[in-house]
Image (cartoon, rainbow over all chains, first blue to last red; front, side, top):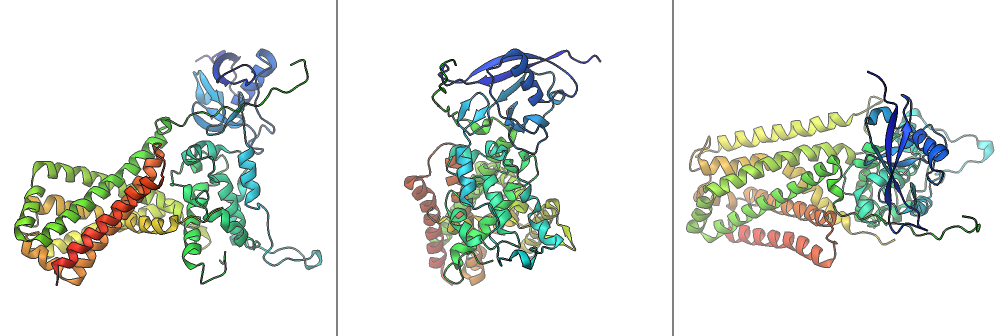
Length: 249
Length: 137
Length: 118
């Protein structure tokens, strides 16, 4: 079986200065067995059409830059291989549920704002000075949060989440998974400061457990688990708030 | 662009209409959510039954008669199938609502929780059915 | 950000979901198919005197009430969210229709069960 010589890409273009709405454009790219969708786009930009815009950086699924819809599914372009999508044509579109700025570049400002809002850093439970040494954590304590700490902020889960699509104010799976990562870290004492986000309608309560976020996450973070676990925590806080201090474990 | 100025931003928002038809995963989600209708219908059937019971023997006989009609039997077959789908999808999603559980240092897998849920359902079904048999006139 | 009141309805949804997952199938089987058809349980399993006697006991009353109430609140919570999923905004009207409906079912069932007496 001879290898195909070329593959067709259908890319949703959008240039605000000249397009009233997005339009599909076809490109024919030379095929090779190890061709990734990102590499195919690089060929388009280098050889065929320099106006194509897209985000990318590490080429190894750790920076989270190259998220886009490939044949209708949220994927990292650098670790999506053309050989798995043959014979094509391959439909490439900007990440779903985000406004398109240009071509495959989406407006991620809302995501960044939400991320900052949950204080995504350790707020020490018992602050230690440098002389006192490290914050000690057992392997089991680490295992509680390790998968949630793997988030690379690629936003594929937001493209998967219909509740975010229907309501862009929803804090969303990725940010809530990170909120959980810090709350459940044994070294952290900042739970009370993050409760307001969790308890809001736009917090965990917009989630209807579709679960697609966890399916598409390239790092197996399982944001669906993080969000739905915290419905219990939020409910506890709601009913017991007059009996115990805010955010108590 | 030769004038050195950036193009003005005009972000394009794509419509959400028909979103759930775009992926089989979403279709399965909508089917799961549709089973709520069966739960509601059955609650109403029971409520009507209780009201008829309170209204006396003649009224309750009317309700029993209605239950024997082909329409009601067909409805209950549909309800039965829906409740099975509901139970399956409920336990499928249940592990997602629980914190990570560690048994002897190892993570309890989602599949184990799902099987436990199903086993509990089978057990309850058998127990209730046995109880119903025991309570025969 | 305003605190959501969702936990109240979510708790009812959760309890109703668990109860309907465990019990729903067998209840539908018995009350909707076996008893009316007279299969396995005999033709008089759900007769008026037996049903009345069941509903007149505390245990029977409570069981029927809890099933109806939790099934109704569970279903209405999900239907409200499903309306949102298909584009119907969950405004006051939708919430009133759904949760109001559940409340109505609860009240009607309670009234009927209480009027049956002991």
